[in-house]
Length: 129
Image (cartoon, rainbow, N blue to C red; front, side, top):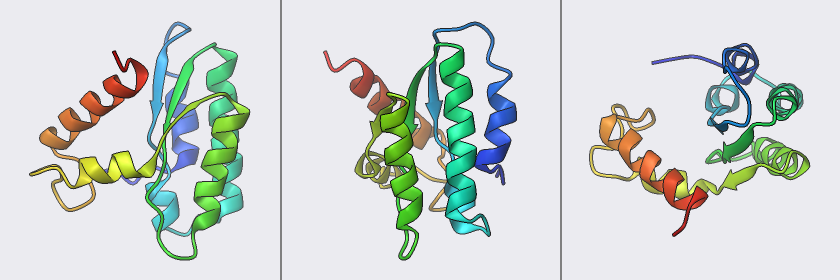
């Protein structure tokens, strides 16, 4: 179980070698559930997506399932996806993965079955044929 925040993903993204990769950005859940203010999340997401675009990566952003009073996190994701021409995987897709039989290890974090379902879903989104 990881407690990574959007800010941590900025450092992790620097480890991507090459350019023109497809980068799946599934970050923000710990920010949303923790003490991170939505404006800080927005700033970190902006920095992350900007750095990925500088290296000409294609970005797939997994939209967060939102909890009450946290709509600003979703708004930040939608606006940043548009600004950086990222593919936005709607939250209903991720919700389906979470609902997959044995899809999580604890109701939130994906199991191997959940990772497999997510991979299939992403493949269908980026190449629907």
